[in-house]
Length: 110
Image 1 (cartoon, one colour):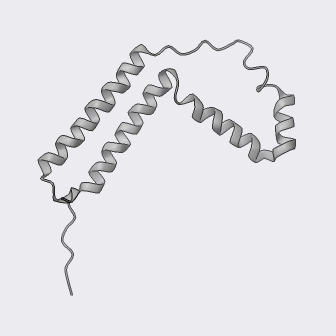
Image 2 (cartoon, helix red, strand yellow; image 1 turned 90 degrees about the vertical axis):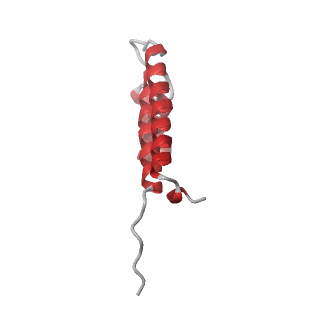
């Protein structure tokens, strides 16, 4: 059975279930998560100008951008950032499911 052949009510029930499970999980993670305490000095290994300059010399600006992106993406899966990530992924999944299963008007044949 095709997703677009499902009754409208069944599709809405699936979307509601996706939203309920995902947003409930996000709220639970948000309320129970503890963000790690940041060191007032930061990470001396990666935050120093010498380290960043060496990375730039070895791999160029792309190396710095890739390192910053990797650090940012890694931070999305810890503490309260995980709750935000779950909420956004839930909304994207629900919207995507709605978009894929939306009934399309019949195509007129010539």
